[in-house]
Length: 148
Image 1 (cartoon, rainbow, N blue to C red):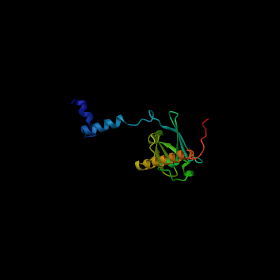
Image 2: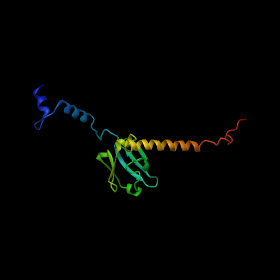
Image 3: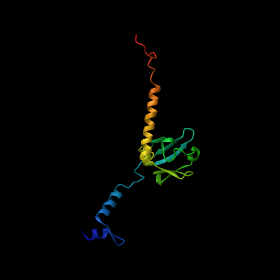
Image 4: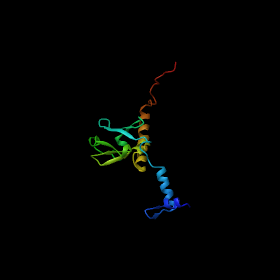
């Protein structure tokens, strides 16, 4: 080990183990840089439609139903109107509720805990199944396109 490497290991009199150094190197390599990510540049809550609408730096827009977002699913929609972008665009904060939502998680379709997401998937499947049954003709109904 060179003199420079020994000096770099010692910070404020603390010698770092190789494991700690590796952890620090990993954290630095995977640190989030808001300049390089899809961060929020605008956000609003559409009260009549109960949708959280977020515009990302890339121009992409996300529109997520209130009922899908665990932290605000049962909140008064009027209290969601005051939404602020925080953390250089990496999160949203609802002032009146003291709740926050991570933009990266939301962008990846993660709207709550594992348990919440499992329940959300189950509700979506049930909704799709009901919709497909509504579009299916009754067994004794005449076909819309009768054969010649």
